Image (cartoon, rainbow over the protein chains, first blue to last red):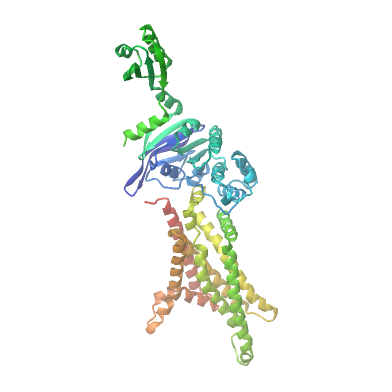
Length: 307
Length: 250
């Protein structure tokens, strides 16, 4: 599969401060890439460079086979970008604004109306299409921003914190929209909301202090998350040394009387072995709960390790 | 693509009361000045009739009218151009243009033509006044055309300066003040040139007023025309450079 975006050793300095350091990744069609990071990690800077708003200090960005610096117009044609503040002309109505965007994107005159209708339907804007953007609520303004980004049916859609300031129902709708768009586009989504990544992305990248510290598919991440722990309560004290011999168990921590925390791969096999051992030795199993690592744990662990 | 941006810019001006106010106020002021000139002409007309080769209607009414219009536009243009790029940057709407498949030059030229459109409209409305004299008199067409050309070239230069200031400045009022300062300085540069009989040729050449008056008098010299064209082109190029620098921001 050809890559829609190839980012190669991207660096960006503001004066002497390095905002983005040696970031490389690729994005293929059908992927939704979640770009995670704490505030000031370099998410927005990376997004701005990808969209051609900011020149990189070094490194190369290729969009759909076109180099962003050498052939900016061809590259940008396959790009829809929603910055963290949606660039809306508040004095225009939704319809007028989208019409202007369509013209800027170079959509053929006879297909502009169709493109606008399509984008408005997808973002649920049909009912407000003749209202002034200034009079719309924040959530609707955000939707106008998304409509603007998908208007010309670009191959790559870059959304910088698209669900900020939306109510829970709108957030769900936007996430559903992102999943739907993700089927036939490549999407990069920046956010600091972890559940958002778990719900709508296929791949995840964590950036911290300008460096990529994790690049993983959600499936792979779930596997990492399975390396969790088991909460075991028995009625009689258990022999920890015997439990340690079970394959897959890495360490055991005694929490209280007869309460153990067993660090292991949370797979059926290991869990079954532990349960069987406890029963066979007559310690009387009372509770066995798998404690999965949440994405938050991984995120915090990774961002704190490096600081 | 340039025209798309220009059209949007022009229409946006009319969505706010700004353009309407500017047109109304300018028209009111200039109409008053025009009528005073016409009044003067009717008063001195009998005397003029006895002089051979006396100044005609165009000299007494048209030239001062365009001269006044130039000074008023010097005050008004900064207000019209200050928002061009500056406000887009402040409202963060500039990224819409920057991430669209258009070049920096297209953005700048579009913005330029859009705001120039309004000023040309002002010039057109001013021109209607001397044309109204045709009802009861005759006009020196060459003089009128020369004045028209002079004013059009002048507003092109003013707009380019304003656009550049708007790309550089961080706040619209700063842009307006900067434009006004530069234009007024270039306008009055000629005054000091005449002092003590020591004329500075450089200052004389740089002065907008001198070139404008040369054109107004009906002497179409390539020096004056190319002065305005170079002036305009320089500031447009500087604007393009300055906007392109936005992406680099060290």
